[in-house]
Image (tube, rainbow, N blue to C red):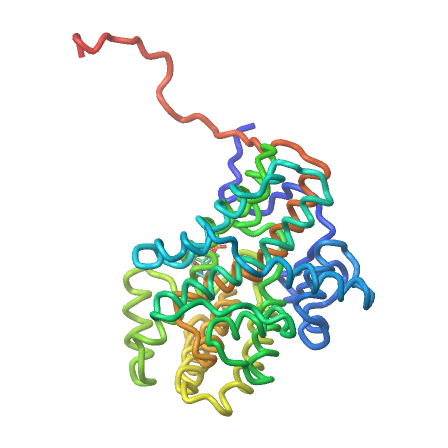
Length: 376
Ligand code: COA
């Protein structure tokens, strides 16, 4: 075979029951449920159950999952001590990656790849990763970590652990919906990383650490923080045109724009924009959202006729900014949601495993004579 599938574009590497994307229509479906319905009516915990079981939970199942997540929220001593050591030197995404490996290292069942244990691991990581990021942010701000609150849902508790204050109803809902929107996205780069690592029958913790490392890049999850930097650098409407022209002139990309699969507007961006309007009504940082809208409109005119539209990262940046969340937590927050999709794909992978091992087409030299180093 001499063809190369660069970037594996258009290649099906597996079958999945989790997610379907129609990039031409702008549709995103989790196990048969449209993302607009889930964002409107569901909760992150329900979506986690859906991804792990391909059906919505009944009341008892939802309550059991919440109890399990609550139980798993606190960090072991060693993990908290690790964060205390790391925060002055290490950025949050790498802290998350390291913490996941350490949570795995102290789990005596980490190499048990049977489905019930893997499901517990999935819930454990979903719960604990939020606590890791909140503790990291508290510590670097000279504050002690806040213990989780059992009466708050996953998204609300995360905001509570960040600030030590109960979030408003709007902030709770917006964070919950942001988690739902980022939970799953078929065979994206980080999910594929998790799949490759899992396919060697390495454990779920290592597979998730691989995924976190992959999500970090600016062409993937790192784009939301990069959007923040772009809009922050633009500052005023009059700077939009010169900034964008200079950027494109240097052959660079506008972050938060374009997608490998969506050739129309990303539905997640549509939902986040709607939420952005609600948050902006009371936010002191609404200028940032307003400027993002103007940037979006400028780019729409500039890129007219090309399939380049705002993606999920474009509006998550302004929504998080208006919620008062520091910009280097945007990509970690993506990971706190995507952990459900990553682990759901790993459940599928471990249940029907095949080692991922593609080929590379050799283009190097042929039949060379070996000459000893003394004679070279
Ligand atoms: N800004 C400007 N031009 C862009 C662009 C962007 N954000 N994204 C793609 N393009 C252009 C490319 O330069 C290329 O132009 P050309 O045909 O003249 O060479 C064309 O659109 C196709 O791009 P390509 O690199 O083939 O698309 P891809 O499928 O590899 O890219 C992304 C997908 C996401 C990597 C890309 O759109 C990008 O870099 N976006 C910014 C990063 C981002 O927001 N990532 C988060 C994704 S959720």
